[in-house]
Length: 617
View 1: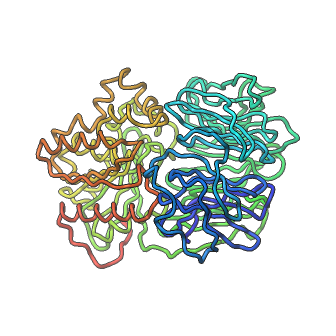
View 2: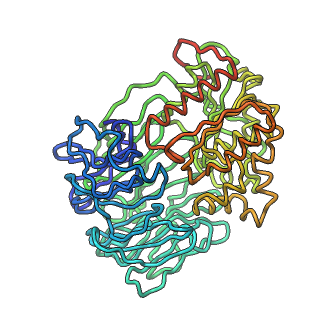
View 3: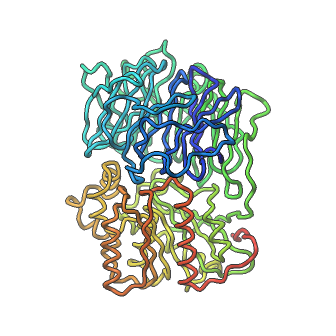
């Protein structure tokens, strides 16, 4: 059993119990953790793994989202040293897609049964419990709608209502009377409050002009009225806000809790304390704030990235942390303890350390992490392009960087416009030039690295997954003179076709990026689609796709590959299992091995036998 990939979910009424997501025999699975005995046992055995799990407040049962059709099967009963179930456990009905159902298993192990009876199969949009666990709320995506259900765990589901598009349940009030859902942050349904009595219509909080709103959670104090914690973005700041919907029309920003880039927040400790996570320029920091005392303190988190954080009932923070040189490990922080914190788990340091480069541009510098092999450049350079676009590359452990640098390539990770972590303008102000604005940034960084002697101008390529794969394909056609290699896994290749066939949540993302759908702004979709530029592609292309990918569907990838075949462009298509994002280590290893082979063949690279060293600059 490997390290936790998510922070534990704790039973608030049973401090000795939690559930984690860990790699077990190469697959993500739900793992029950008895804190008092420090014993873990695996609850799930699905062949495609499990990446969503939660624990009921009393700690008696664990919920997990099943995409493999394993209702009624037994979980494994062993401890941390026991063998996980083999590949034959469960049925492979879902074939790695995101659709499935919520199941419920006793904490101590046993058969899995529906968490709420008669829930339809669909996409998981969120779950929530009240303070006692007597009421659960579930959001399921079905046929382009969000269906919200409530009920007693293990009992029948009651349909609360149906909404078009995508809404995500965020939290229930402690008494279970009111459900908060997240909608479109800058839309008329930024926050939806749905009374759970089934007789009162939901109300929506709309975002104001130039504003975006995200609901976080209700204050857990059952003696107080509903008070919702939110994050509000305006102009160049992200601000913590609170809202008492029974007494206030709009959220109130909290003075002194504004930040220049993305944050998340949660209630912490007794009273009205708040824990804030701030992401800026590829690194994380954690702060605690007292809303009444107006105090603010930064916690001793090492330089790097906090991937996830959870608060144990005793106030200890369990953080999944890594840096470019250190694999993920669990950092325990005790804000009230002068000694600070401790490492629960350790990992071996990696010799790969990135340099950083800020490439000047008229609209602001473009930030990149650059890692090179030892010795003197220039080197063949691979731009490892992140997806999203609403995420960012960071000072975090990425095993792909070591693999590529060991093979002799400089690895460049660029946070182009649209990335998080650099403020609202960097994320949003690029005029609906989807893809093309990002290519401008990648081209500028490429020119900077060529001029600095880091990148070989004749051997610079792109490698990306999901939206990063989309940018790789777009660049090969829109900037054919700059790139001599492209590798795209699970990409968008035909934007119009992908939009129509993808999930409702991603169609909503498209409408925000483009300012409408393909029927509203067809010229923007045409300008952003790799298929539009296929005739200009000259470099070798690797396409990796899955027949069960419901986010970047396979048909549009095959259409792009057919176009390349007709144009006699050198390319290879590799089909893999696991949907858009496999939860099996073996699938990821196969894709990376294919990429290494393909790049070596295209560039005739000679891998060095020495460890990687940081880039200068």
